[in-house]
Image (cartoon, rainbow, N blue to C red; front, side, top):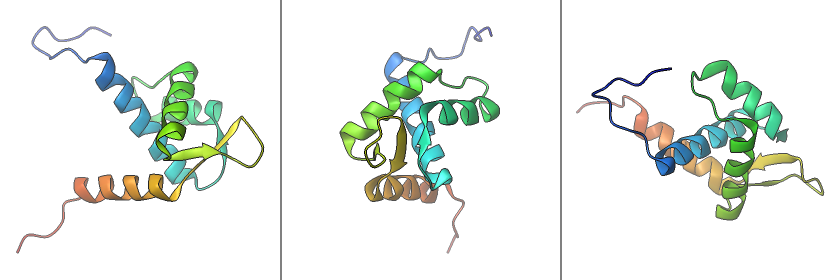
Length: 102
């Protein structure tokens, strides 16, 4: 897919941050433990520029390090969102909402 000549370039950091947020939202919506492949498949179904399974793995590692997601029980393959992760997503969704004007 070609970029528009006047479109700002997306940095690697912005790309990684977008992947991390997308992965966190899938975990939030899932509400159950899921694998990186399940996350990647779901994101590929809804995003034009979805992260690859390798990028999803990297995002999960970052989320785990930040305490926003963790592995499930004694597995290394299944991830769940943590309470702080759910709070983060809820805050982001509230900020994106239309809200009411007084």
